[in-house]
Amino acid sequence: MNLVGKDRILITGGSGFIGTNLVQYLLDMNSTVLNVDLQQPLNRAHDALWVRGDILDESLLDRIFTDYHPTQVIHLAARTDISEKKSLDGYRVNIEGTKNLLQVISKTPSVRRVMVTSSMLVCRLGYTPVSDQDYTPPNLYGESKVLTEQITRKFGLPCTWLIIRPTTIWGPWSFRYRDEFFRILQRGLYFHPGNGPVIKTYGYVGNAVYQICRFLDLSDEDVYGKTFYIGDPPMDLKTWVDKFSEGLYGKKVRVVPTWVLRCVSYAGDLLASLGIPFPLTTFRLKNMITPHILDVDTTIKITGLPPYTMDEGVRLTIEWLGKHQHP
Image (cartoon, rainbow, N blue to C red; front, side, top):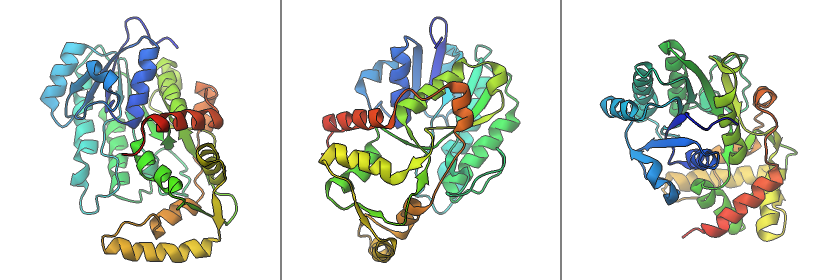
């Protein structure tokens, strides 16, 4: 890696899950980093690198860029939940925020490379796109990320740019995984559907940030105007769940016929409609049993093999969980 010296990397959304790991990786590489985010960093050790900023405020972005003179920009800032059901306006930060950022970048001659983060949910789960612009978004969040990509492609940035689509990323500093998946495992409420292997494209966050940083180093020809999925090679979901269950509790997860879980998920839908939280709904079950294979081979061919194995990622995540128990 050559991310040292005169490189000045600006990250939007560096206080979040992937951003926290990315900032630490770059610090370990002795890179100069600035994190622009509305939220305080999850890792308080990163506070000195943080500027509170809203990408919906173009004038503020302009001042930050003028003061910092970034050479590379990694755009992670976004609203990433899928709970908005009424209007795309709920995802203004993904759409208008990206426009603002690109506008400021276009006026900043020091910027040599820009990486814009999209989402695998520009296509529905189980769908394999035939091109970078083949879209089947399943929800408003996915639609907002389609617009993010289209805005980026049409903008005409005067520097090298690329788009990344994270797969299902897991690892340290994901409080959502801690508070949802791992809590369900801890309570013994996880039951795996017994309908055979379900192949998924997941990614350990350490491998994801490695790939992101490799994209900053690769030649313009390798990355210019291209779209890449980031993550690990596809694997069987049960293998991944068993690794965590064995590491945390010394035993594999229980397997239950899919039809049983489907009946339970209907009850979960009913309870959810009454405002009563329940760990399994038809939406979650569909996500569990739908294979989802994405093209990370193209990424791995140019970035190299991911540095962490699944076993290493599981071990490091369990160590982090031990230090950040659910309150």
